[in-house]
Length: 226
Image 1 (cartoon, rainbow, N blue to C red):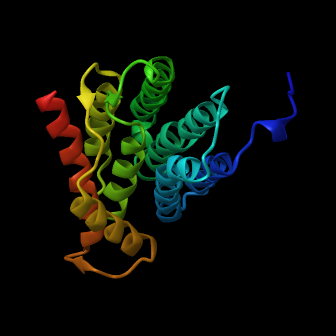
Image 2: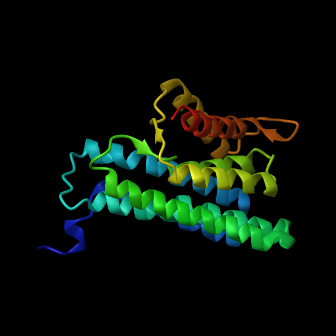
């Protein structure tokens, strides 16, 4: 068996690594207490994660050993598990130091549920179509847009994080986010957020709020319907 790393890595894997790199940089920015940039980098992770499968299909990749699926999941652990957890914990250290311990517990819960969700996905993906449990990128986009909306509150963030983490490991089916009109609207909103276009009402960032509410609606509607 050829074990050279170049025999496994494809173009789509480089996109997955960009996802992971964005997640690592987000963690660094959270530690640095630059929560604005940390949030934006989590959104970049989502964008890279959303196109690696498309790149794989367009390049007609043949992945006999499922290297791509594994590198994608490992990257997701960093960007959508550890990054939002460190973001939440770092935010509490700066803005609510008395809440360090409960925030640490919630942050750990995010990572544990994220790992469980991704591991189950890798095990069942060849046998079950669609998503079982809330997709892990959701926790990162919710935390990022919640902060960028200007409405961030540590107590509300706890509640959302716990609900999302439980939803990730639940046994309910989640449809793919396939509504093209909502995808376009959210795509535009995320670009506006990344570019920091000043579209705000009473200090509330409207594009970030739209992306946040859409993500929460996807979370709750699928959970109730499932």
